[in-house]
Amino acid sequence: MSEQLATQLDEENNAFPIPRDTNTASETTSDLMLAKMLQMQFDREFDDQLRREEKKFNGESKVSISFENYRMVHPYEDSDSSEDEVDWQDTRHDPYKADKPQTTPRRGFTGKGKNITTKHDAETCGRKNTARMDNFAPEVHVGDGLGMDLKLSNQVFNSLKQHCYSEQRRSARLHEKKEHSTAEQAVDPRTRLLMYKMVNAGVLENINGCISTGKESVVFHADGGSLEEQPVPDEVVLKVFKTTLNEFKNRDRYIKDDYRFKERFSKLNPRKVIRLWAEKEMHNLARMKKAEIPCPEVVLLKKHILVMSFIGKDHVPAPKLKDVVLNSEDMKNAFYQVLHLMQLMYQECNLVHADLSEYNMLWHEGKVWLIDVSQSIEPTHPHGLEFLFRDCRNVSTFFQKRGVSEAMSVYELFNAVSGLNIPVGAEEEAEFMAEIVALEKRNEDHVQKRGKKTFPVTCEDERLRLKRV
Image 1 (cartoon, rainbow, N blue to C red):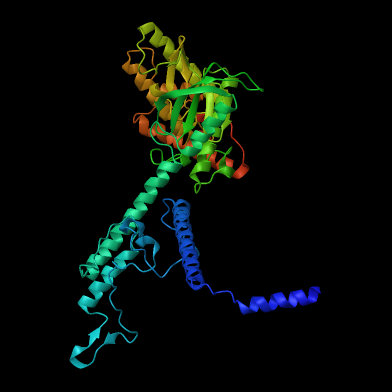
Image 2: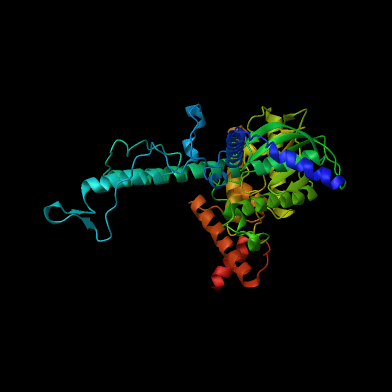
C-alpha cells in the first residue's frame, strides 16, 4: 500500500514542475564582483603595509632594499585615488625620468658618409657626461641635466668628478675624526663608554668636568668611589690621552727607544701607541712614588684613561708654578726643592723628566709637585742627556727671571743633577753639547753591544777613552 502511495505522489509532482529563478545568474555574478573588490581592497591594504615596512627597514640608509616583488600589483587604477597615494620611488619605471642618450655601437660610430658620428663627437660626449652624473654620491645634487638637454665637456665633468671625490674623502675624514678621536675638551664614544663603565662599577661617583687640556691629553675632575684592592681618594682626576696625533706628532721619539717598550712599539697603530703612552706614565709615577717624590698617585689604568689622585682641594686644582705668587724666600725654597726632585728622579728613579718647566710643576701645601711624566725616559735613552739639558735650561731660566739669586746656571745645574763634571769652555754651550753628544754616543754603542743599561760615567773616563783611541 505504501509503494502505491509513493508512486502516486511522484506522478503528481511531475505534473506540476517547479518554476526556474531567473535572478540566480545575476546574483552569482554580483557575488563574484564583490569578492574581487574585497580581494583588491585587501591587496591594497597589504601593499600599504608592505610600503611602511620597507620604509622602516631601510630608514635613512643610502642603500635601500626594495619589497617590489612581494606587492600585489593590479592592472587597474582607482579613479578616486589621489596623487599622494602614488609613490614613484617604489615603481621601476618613473614616467617623469628623462631618457638617457643613446650610446654609440661597439664599432665606435654611427651613420654613413658625411653623416657619420663617432664616439668623440662633442654633443654625444656632452650628453653622456650629463647622464654619468647620476653615478655621483647621493649627497651631490646634480639636478635635472638630462631634462634640459645639458651637455658637459670632458674637462668640466672631470673637474666635477674630482671635486665630488675630494668632498667624499674630506667628509669621511671629518666623520672618522669625530667618532674615533678625542678633541679639545671632548671625548670620542669609546672613551665615553669607558668612563661610564667606571662610574657604573663604583670606581667613580661622578665626573664633574674638564679642568685642563694639553697637546697630549684632556684632564677631568671626578669624585672617587671604591675599589676592592685599594682605597680610592675622595677627589681624583681622569687623564684621557688623545687618540689623535695631530697636535703631538713626535711622541714616538720618546717611546720607541725606551727599552721597556721598544719591543711593543708599533707606529702603524696610533691607538695602541696611546695605550703604551698611558702605561708609561703609570710606571714612571710608580717609580717616583717609591722614591717619595711629590706626584699624583695612580689609582687605575684603563686602556688610554689614567685615574690619579687629585692635587688640590675642594674641586680647585693646585696652581702651576708659573701662576703662583710667592715671596723671595718661598721662591728660593721652591728652587732648592726642584733641584732636589731632579736629583732624585735622575739618581733614585733613573728617570729624566724630558718636559720639565714651570708649566708641569704645581705648588700645593708649600711643596713643589711634579706632574706630566708620560714622556719621561731613562738616562740610557739615545737623547736622554739632551732632554736633561733642556730641562735644566727651562728651570734655570725660570728661577733667574723670578729673581732667585741662588739659581744655578744651566751648566752648573746639569752637572749637579747628573753627577757629571763636564767643564764649560770658552765657547760654552757648543762645547758643552759636544761633550753630551759624545757621552750619549758611547752609551748607545754600549747598549747595542751588551743589550743592557750602562752606569753613569764621568767626563774624565770619557777623555781617557778618547786618548787611548
